[in-house]
Length: 285
Image (cartoon, rainbow, N blue to C red; front, side):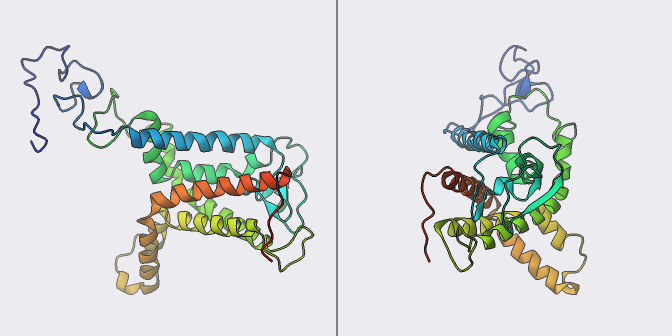
């Protein structure tokens, strides 16, 4: 073998010994018999541990902010966690995304009405699935590392079979990105809603909108929607060129996933600090 290891002779190996057919997980009878515990001796656990820590930090922060139902608007900035605001109990935002689709009966945070779409888009994303499968479930822990689970069914059973809804969450993520772009345009006003002004928050929102669009368009589903099911690219030159552009973004899908995750949290944090009076928005002009 290329690794320099050889599987044990299972005919002479006790059932309680490593590599025996009577073991659990990767040592089970249906798995290949591998002598060492895992083939890698480096610190392979650092990557999934760092991934789990990063995702957990975002989950804790976003959960707190989503249920807070406060300090999400500081004119002219609105937190991306609360945009568009679909409930009647939203803070009034002049020319902002106030769409009172839900009446007064909705008493919870309006963020809970909109976050389901970007959350569903990211949770079903091909990269994020790999990230949290490895980081939280150790399925698998890393490349060339023995999987600890007794059985493997992939995404063929509930609830993981719901990951197939990723394309539909992509359709919902596109208009959400459009709303965040609209919010970014509104940041070129001052606190009295006069146009022609730009603050530090405007730059932060610009970067976030660009990263959100780049991450959304780099999605594998987007690539398939644009160029999938075509028999002859030569007959569809426009779609072929768009497919090539999306393919280049797709090569950076992991980096864009993390960058956009950080940027959307920083946007919300910036609005929170302004709304709570920690500092005033520095004006560039």
